[in-house]
Image (cartoon, rainbow, N blue to C red; front, side):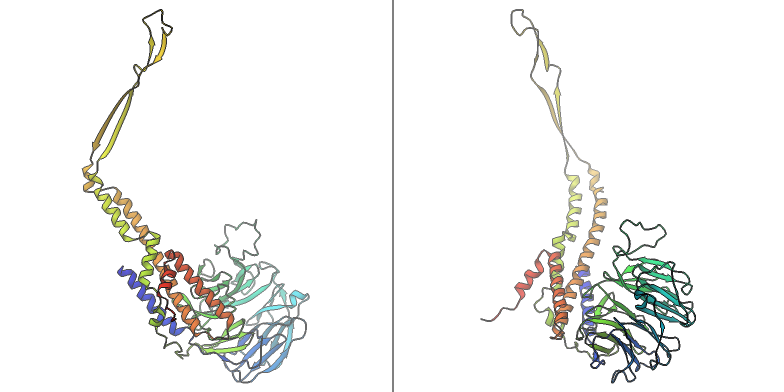
Length: 523
């Protein structure tokens, strides 16, 4: 029980720190009247210079969003701005649009189209990466590469295929590894794009009858369409990817993967990932921004009202940028507004059952109490005092059947007849007094005890996480902007889901206690 209380106290303290972290970012709308923004790029040398794409236009600000001007108008049908990238010298800007690839050599003042596909799908550029004189361009018809600064292009025919490219990343300072996300999976190149290896296969693309090859790396189970891959530029071996099932991490260039927890995420469908200079991981969903910290996700945007979110970016000064339906927003991850510092945990626990009571209810329902093992041991110790009872039963068949004889006048003479059953029985008692010293059942109890302790630990850990996660969501609901109805609905849904999970672990005890502790309305 002391271990249970200590675990609860640790989670309690983590909740307090999370309450102070969550929502502390102060978001500023720097997009002015520009709505439905898409890709965003911040200049690495001067964070006041920002490029933003919106359908048919690329906008630029030189003063951190105080004013914007259009620097490129993209003509044609469906001219979305899907990706923006910077060159090696920070003066060259690339724009992957729905009508080809554009480049500016003077920070967006003049532009030229350097790629135009032969077919409609080739012309729809989705991602771009510049590495020295090599340019990697993703389109909806596959990957194109230029090794002469964009003067000529060739299509990568081997390995990747002709499916849509989603994003392209590089990792490592020297001898960079190139990763890209395609409709068919994630690919890796160790030789600057000359050859490619598929390290993750999208199960939405794999044919149902296709078997996984023996040499193919282990895949996350039931993987759906991949949304994004993000590589750590400081380490060529560490990378992440997101899909509809959450976020996965690899520390060996994609040879094996581990799934990060979904605790704290409103939706497991993560659209985009970003890594800060200190390797902090940020995730973007359609309704929020989350920071991965201490084995859980912390929302940083529940005071943000931006509609559907489209893009996430970071600059070298630890500023976060978001584009969405309602504009462009900026926040500093170093801010410490302490907007929730006045929130007292006791206020949220006032009408809640104590964590110890919830733990005990879960243990009782799962029948994993430590007293159960103690009862087994006592029973095994008393086993030697009880005798082994043996009952024997035998039947004498010597006279069971016999011939009827002795007369020649009776009708049943010389007939085989059945006689009476002749039964013998006995009862014996025996004791094995050696069991008083050692009982072999103790070995089985030791094994079962270990398994039960592990199961009880898993249940308590699950109860602790859900209990305090519910309190955190409760505090977020109280601090959520009233006008953000969509996010409020998502959080209320999450709140009810966590309540139902606690009921499932305690056989309805949690909701029953909530009703008993609910404040009574005055007549």
